[in-house]
Image 1: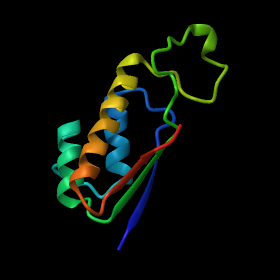
Image 2 (image 1 turned 180 degrees about the vertical axis):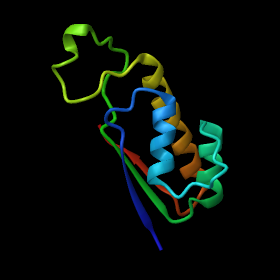
Image 3 (image 1 turned 60 degrees about the vertical axis):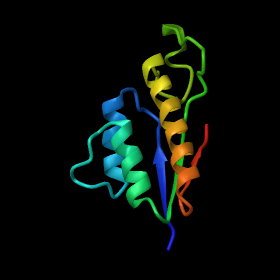
Image 4 (image 1 turned 120 degrees about the horizontal axis):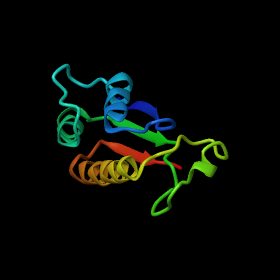
Length: 109
């Protein structure tokens, strides 16, 4: 049976916040290691039937956000580190989906 999980990335500014959110929203094991390798393992070992929908992924790819921009959009100000990390997360998820028959993962802006 499919389980659908909606994961709101809005306001995530650090790797630690991202992994805390994943722990909160997904039935990850207690020993989850709070890193991308551990997330990949969780997806491929227990993600059968999961449908993950990540949303509020920012569109700042390659853009610098200035102090002037801070109050002008609905998204949290995201450092290039977290943007790169979320990009790595997306690639990792695509790889996990290609290896697991019954795993769906989508990212939306």
